[in-house]
Image (tube, rainbow, N blue to C red; front, side):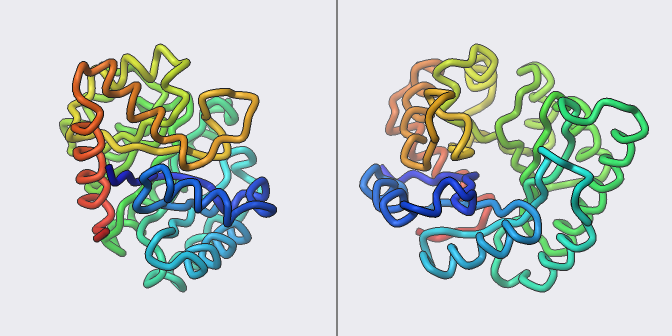
Length: 253
């Protein structure tokens, strides 16, 4: 099986000491490609360096850190993306985080930033990878309103019923290893058509064990759980999710 991790954070500081072994383990577990997301200017630059180091295996996207959404200049991140448009395969993660941001004024501010990134992704004709923590419904509404086309909803935590509006718009949804312990993710995977599903690790978080560092090799747990809840063969899930990733990102492996 050839698998693709559609959203990871190898550029996170937790991988500094053993990145080579993490990438080797991913290869040994059947991963043919990893899409790394660099957060903010510094994280984006680290991601670009990693994708150069593992050229043809790790690919970069650049987004913003929603742990502290207003501690950055989103214009600076957009400039970094534009300056490196030939070195990235997507914009994001970007989007909405209503878990962290509570006031309507600040949420409206996030929506405006989100819309700027949607337009940037459309201009560059690359996928947009969407963060929508506690904001799944509104994130999809904003994407549809702004005519976003190439969309990956990463680790979607909203209702499966509302995810279907994204499916109708042609959006993809990536499922992390935390599906093994998340009834919400299990319901989501059961409801989504297989042709709209990708695998992601979101490493170093959203692993099988919430208290251990997650890594790309663990998308095999996503694969097995998706196969279980959809009652299909794991090889079918592997084939479909890899095909979907190659289609979305325009990769060849």
